[in-house]
Length: 189
Image (cartoon, rainbow, N blue to C red):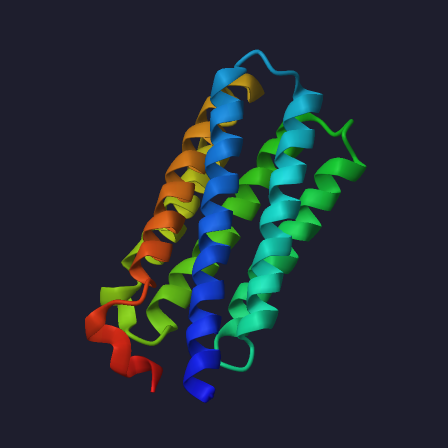
């Protein structure tokens, strides 16, 4: 009975990663398809993306709390996403520079959390490289935004779109890594 519950938990977690990856890729495609988007629309797109990603991360963390000692890291990631997303939606009149720094901060902190999680999850970095790369992409994206605020908020649409697609792809890779395979069957016992 316990093995079945663990299989269900792994399958559920994998589908949550797929969902996070798909949401990120869709957000990225929308951002790239509409480069002339207004600042207000960008704020709402980002806010919705961060909220959805945060809710999915929290649901995944709560579901995994009995099987993983590191579920709190994912919970923190989700809470941060919801806070940043809500802030973007509640104060849409914020300046482009503030939005830029909110996105940059969110990306750096989320990336660091994911890198830490990749090194602390069972199996080590050899198995968790998709999560580590997703975190690294987030950190690099955030640092670039801090270093280059001048080129303008509209160029952020392209960078944010590319980031979201790459991040989404790495989350899908992570989900593929977690699929049951014949050599991992014993891990469910």
